[in-house]
Length: 61
Image: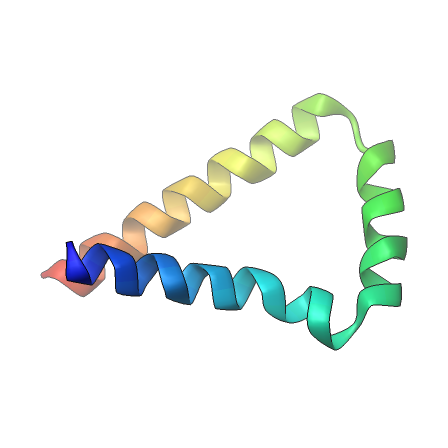
């Protein structure tokens, strides 16, 4: 459980860093993100999940 909490904390840091460092750029980026079709967002999400699984596999082996 300690390992999980550490990983969750690191994810929160990485996810929050852009909002802290460049909030005005994030607002512009989110406006562009809203204009993307759902199929593109699903593909991006799927590829990110596959990449995350690959990184976990590499880290665990």
